[in-house]
Length: 479
Image 1 (cartoon, rainbow, N blue to C red):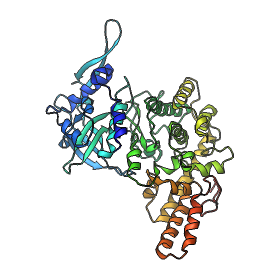
Image 2 (image 1 turned 60 degrees about the vertical axis):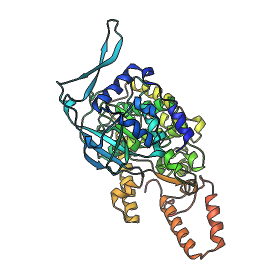
Image 3 (image 1 turned 30 degrees about the horizontal axis):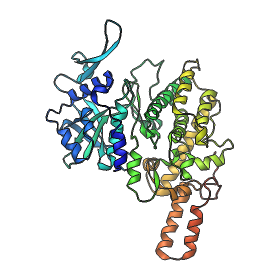
Image 4 (image 1 turned 120 degrees about the vertical axis):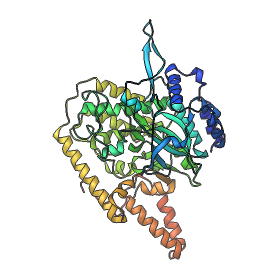
């Protein structure tokens, strides 16, 4: 764990009395739902070498408070559990917004609402395994959750420990799933708590879709990213699996800076994330920045329309597309929307808009009458790309012997050394696997001797945007 990083994040935590009234009320409500009268949280924070300032914000939740605990099948190396908890006899605590005689909003009223069935229903939570190396990210999640008076961020409730003495960070469960599961058609058929004319259901994004719906959904994501950047937080791993949809028509961005802990656990320099969402500068060994997050935001906006992830990698796409964009431009798409996507995809990080600028542009766009639905031309493009995506997924499953679901899971977060990323910048995933296999054989047999080492060095040093011939590179966009 980086001591300097932990200290810098801890310094961001305000004393409870300095928080905004809404944040104070939210914390008091959570502590009523998960009381810790013996202050057990303090001793557990000491075990993790975590700052005691977190006790002002969070609770320790006994693991036996949770029922129906099961592990989620997620990509990445951090175990994630889904669990259910029952309310107390008086139900879950409600935060009531009232106004005084002057019309000013008051957030300091907490009430158990006995007339609402919702407040007595079991609630679902996410438990993310936590160790000492991840404490800075734990602090950062807490900080990002409470400074603002209102936020769509996923709520952090506290800390729990299972019978094996493993610690978990307890957060909201995103009942509408993430952008990945929505895109694959795996989310449940549930309604958003808003009129259908104003906000889309997750299914609307990819079925009865309109440009108005897409714009609103994109703005929810851009607004959350802008909030993080205003707090001077660079996410470093923006992809659909980290964008989650909550009950109250909110969007949350999770796994804040989780990649840093994973990167620090490796001796070789590299990055952690999903290959298809990495911006082009990463393949050249450059650091991730806010502009890198914005590049990924452009990919999410493109995926909101198509329902499938971008193909290949950013450097290969820039070489293959005449306009140097990450993906094909969508024919018949609403032009102002695509102009924002293309601006986010500028190969030069310095020329990309900020997340706040994207949010403001989408806000202006949402005020206009865009039209009730997308054109048949866009629908034809979406259908073609979905067919291509399904075909590629099947091809990957045949090539590796994995099931189709496992092949889809290949697009999950993992650690990539920079030397490997240089290969991915010019070769397909299949070619990189073949190169790795050849490397293994030659290393074991020494068949090429010094010649092998020279070849390996020259491949790693090859410009990341250069066109190369490999088993997949000859395929056209139409295949």
